[in-house]
Image (tube, rainbow, N blue to C red; front, side, top):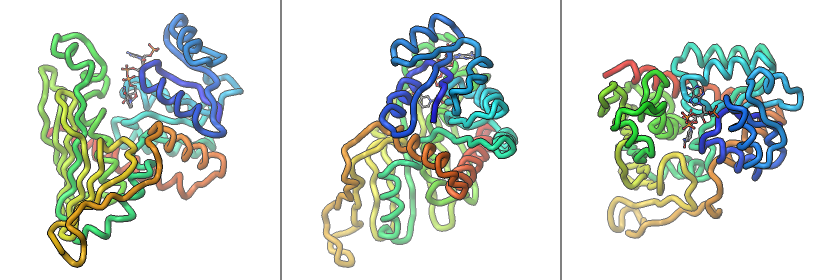
Length: 328
Ligand SMILES: NC(=O)c1ccc[n+]([C@@H]2O[C@H](COP(=O)([O-])OP(=O)(O)OC[C@H]3O[C@@H](n4cnc5c(N)ncnc54)[C@H](OP(=O)(O)O)[C@@H]3O)[C@@H](O)[C@H]2O)c1
């Protein structure tokens, strides 16, 4: 994959780092709206080409994939442009604000013989696979609790009434879109479509959700997803059942070297009253490398089955985001 990037925020730095750690992928060019910024950004990362006209980058025959890391409100239009230029797309989360736009992009990609992926770390992580594998050990599930709370470096600006995309409804910002989306992926990637969904938010002066709790009802259990950009917490995922609890260390988007299995009670059905750690057997490495490797593999092998599964997952998450962003 030869990639051209859109955006010059921190996430693009991380994507470039991840791509450089992944086989068969390289950064061919970077794009910024400003010529000077594009030039400096290319220099910073040792990338040979830079563009400040998006159409020119999309017409570059040496680029086959566009990474879209612009403000959320631009994901749809820029991805669409890239598809029409016959490029594969890696589109940052949240994929699109509406399901209609999401479906349109998938259909357009098919018509143009390219792939479009949602850049979401969670469902590609090795600890996520381990959780899935050991889910049966928990018995009858009662609760899934995710908390991803990260005090945003932009929250101070927001409180001072300065413009910031991340807290602007016009840019599709907010805690649900920016941070809770990882928790939604975590839960729905394992349990699929919930029976019902509701979202209760703390809202700022412009109506944006600076934090909130999403509640998803599944047959027999309840999932709660806390996402906050206005405060911090110890981030975690707990999956609680009557035979035990699985704990994931850290947030729903990060790689951790082990997850923990906690039996509910001493001597219960032969299980020890100590926490068992389920080791992944890896050191923590750059969390975005796993999604990159999978996108590259699917594209190279034309693995339509795996691709369709990812599309289904993205469609489900976008439909939940859209439903919740319509209000309480
Ligand atoms: N920040 C993170 O840690 C993080 C983590 C995971 C995913 N993401 C996702 O990555 C995407 C980018 O996040 P971000 O925090 O970097 O966003 P951002 O700072 O709001 O904007 C990203 C880039 O888009 C360009 N841009 C800014 N305002 C614009 C506007 N009004 N019109 C057109 N382009 C504009 C800027 O690049 P130029 O000025 O160079 O053109 C900027 O670097 C989002 O979708 C976010 O959900 C972010």
